[in-house]
Image (cartoon, rainbow over all chains, first blue to last red):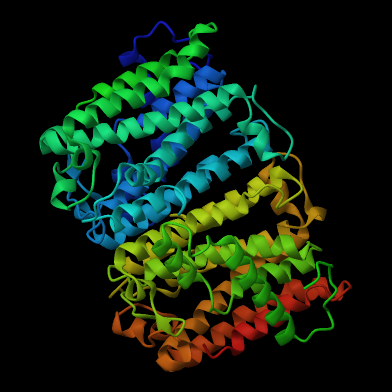
Length: 320
Length: 320
């Protein structure tokens, strides 16, 4: 994979996605400690939990946003790795018996089944640290202030007001009849915060959008970032609606994780609240809303948002 | 507490420590999300796990090193809060049933007993994120490059080659006859890495030791940092030896956590390997070795290392 910018517009989406997935896998394999380094079992388990699977949706989003902003591919790959490490840690912890108690992940035994609970707990903990390790490696961005802001964003997206908080709301919601608004509040945190981080971090890898001042707000003020933020929010929700539909309809073998878990756990989902038909309509509506400002950017010239549009379509069509 | 530098040398150690502990508590209470913000139960549990207890040894070390380097007290307090958040998260996860299974912490029910296991898992996860959130807040250091390096250090100290890795080795060592060298290898990671981070982060808060270049090694190259690194390594080990002695000798009420846990769990400790008498001698030796370069700095003028020497003595004399 070369490091040129926009050198791959000729690729169809499948080829492009495969390139990104392959680059992500390589980067993750490199940043994870080698399995022979002590503590060996922990490092083996970390590699088991992260490598060799997953759709890498967050990495695709980071690269799509990075291309839109003209970011260097190698830098986006590193930032995307940090996001994928956070995602992988959350899956390991979510699967544990005290949480969702799931034995299957990406078609393999989940981490605490393949290893043990204590190891899975430490795997998640160490993967979170590694994400911040990767994102703070000197030189990821030419402007250390912006790199610091990127790390700050990932920390906030992961924490109690972001992903971990969404997970807590999810646990508290078992057996409750949530409104659609409450469900949205949860998902904007549980999955939405990290999806937003993936999109914005990919964009912020660009040197063109550097702000040397310490004013946080400047980073959020440009029309491009507003468009990306809008896209990320709505595509994240669409992703979740589709996830709920798949959980209710697909079988375990297709999903690579146990299907029907939400219903079994008596968790409110878009399907339990709206039914499948209205959930499908909501996903379509969220999709259209998500892509609107990206289509406008595209029309302004250069077709620079094409990958974001393709990912949006991919999310709508995925089967697992 | 004023923000002046070295304005408190007249205080005796107890008064100084109390000032630092109080400032740390205030800073932690401020950076933790309010208990009324959703998800309320998670935020309540995070505050329960962090506030109102602990010796704050890591904060004391950060401030002592910060004073030696002429750092602003308010900045050290924030950096120290990040370290204490990592420490608090590790205690919450360590106490869980799949790890050390301890019901008591700081004289109170441990987090998973007061709340539940799923909440405790998320509390630890969210506290780790919060530590990086705090440490990457704009303006903690005037030089964003140095702040980025500080965050990088904390990430490495927390991860699989640091604290989480030490914990994994600890789990693997149950029932094994470790050599003293293997025990040291474990403790340099399990507790040592974070103690080292506390000392170095306190020092790096100083504007005097700013390095604008991207060369990591420059931060480690000065004689003062070498002295601090040496001190941190040996005082961390001494702390652990004393911990092992206390675990074997003190009662549960004094410790505020269950005593005799190591023996019960068949874990190798300095006491099981060396016996109490030789363990005490080792602690004294580590102490003397730790303070040697600090005494030299002190003698060179200004008594700037006095708090580090006092903490070293405090660690040797503590009863819990």
